[in-house]
Image (cartoon, rainbow, N blue to C red; front, top):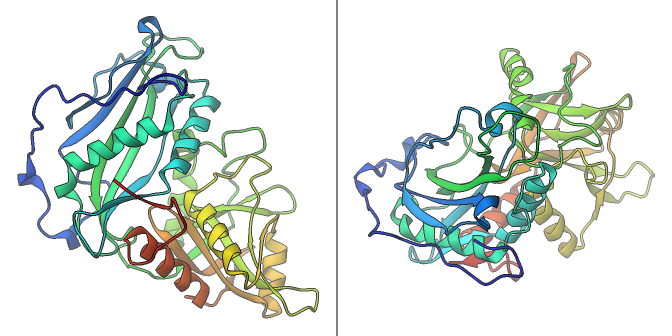
Length: 375
């Protein structure tokens, strides 16, 4: 792989693919997220001593061999992406990615935030490499809406020395796995709690990058929330209890305005503070709803006191989380200061976003130009 100014270098297949399709799950209803992996993976090393990016390779899925001193293991120098490949509902040979350029932008930004070399890689070239990997393992892509091949581009430092320093060796690899609906219960509302002493991210931190450390810190509060009967954490920040994210998703609130105008607005927290991940689904919801022109679409700070007041006044119409794995997830309850705020679910707008986004991803609906990329 190359940096942007240099020539294209296609992925190499040094031998015929080992199409071990005997392990493809026969009953897709039994698929569990991230448990079964397809036959091949893409790997692209970067070595400063050898001139930077090395030739991409598509190889059989295998365990990695790295030094126990690798700085990814000691200092959290690791980032990743979440994408999906879909088979069109109209033609099983029509395979698509959804807005992959946004994933490439975010991966570059995450690498840059971790001071990894090669963050200026050619985005179109990596998309082409990923497309070739998907084509090699296309038989692993389940058919039918709701099913897809999940793609996990990952970058780790393989710098084989201790010491807190920027790495000069990294490995970019992509693994894939067939998946069904993310939540076993299907498209059903979730209960959240905002009553946690923990904070997911803060200004100046890594909240806007998709790095593993952001998720590691959420394990303990998520476990505690689950024990109390809540599906996810609604993450807050600061004394004003500004809402940031829900679990590992972005969050939206659909409200009637409180100024007496009887207008409606779709609100999601802004990215300006640098503590919120710029989600692909988040941006797609903003773009879609803006194009409809039916209500105001606003990126602004929203606090728990505002949400509680809107609910008490009957102005909180619906709320939902948004992310690649789940697409959209309706919210029915938010625990705040010991009591639950009840939210109507599942709302019509949530259903509309779910249907339209799924329709674009699976080729049932013609979406905006460049969203559904045929490979």
